[in-house]
Length: 506
Image (tube, rainbow, N blue to C red; front, top):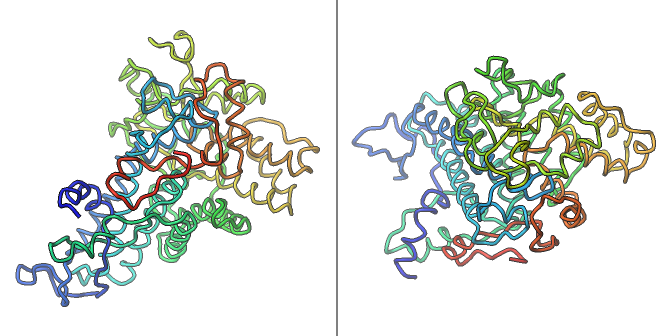
């Protein structure tokens, strides 16, 4: 292998795909000293010298949920809503429009960014999980170590879950890499250029991480929903078992019920999930009983992602001179109107006057409204999603249609909508359609719609029909097929790693 090729790929893989083993020797040294040079008895480098370094590294992992909104939030809305029927791309950018007209290619910069950043996050988790065992600080107990590792495993599961849902077959990396030397370059090569695992293998690793983390993770803290807790692990298990590779609807129900046992429930007022206070100086509420995991931005801390979707109500004219991503579609607006769903529509969509008219007249232009200020939280997991997945499980199992309908009715009555008619409640196919519509209206602009269509095999039926009935949508370039269920592997990453294989259809 040429030296230039190794140099070309190292910036990504040194930070992301580092593969190797590490000593699991606890209390290797009394203390870190210049004499010891930070190594265990068998010569393994010590990564964390003391508790403070472990805590700082874990804080950095939590900070990723705030600082890297591109792949944790922004791109998920582009994929989940603009690539589905909820939204248009919003801008004329060459990297964004393909999500609306179904012309995404492996050269797309958004998918390239997401692939790299998920792997970087997985590498951060691996660094903690692997090296915390050999921290040179006797004040850290074995129980402490388990809590640290559990949080790292939840973070790794979160990143890997999003990544596998987007790309399908991905590298499953749970180890760290050796330094490359002239002597070991041939042996190390496969570690820096890993092959993809199957979707099922990726899901099994996510399952393993979550089940192990469930034992040792912190318990839910109602005053702080930013933590990787047992409840987060349970919520992710609900979402994992609803997916095809390891689908187990009985476990979906089991873990959804466990979350109810943890005290989660719907907020009485739907708007409290998103509202800012009357003075526009802070959110109306944080850490609601519906929030399971969120990234929080306090006043002055600046959640810049709000600039990408609309106005910042705490700084009204800031960065409002260019067209925004994820513009609500006419089809979604019509769906809200047909259902007379005024409450959720007003929380999801707002109208402003603009200086552009890409999709609507500039005098009455709709925007995604669920992220509306620089101090708005990004809610990664919320209970309404989990509760509806429980309803899906009950419908698909076919054993309790009435119970599933009761869940949907609970979601509907919160926003002053009537309960489902008797004819729908007793018909499995009709109830499934009502369920899918309810998820669309409840979870619009939360990055869920595309993945719902994929999970329930509705992509071709829904998406190939929407272009004809939505007059504002850009013309469809390619039809949706089974190959559309996964996005392309970024071509630059294939160029860097010859062991990667492009997804079918790209």
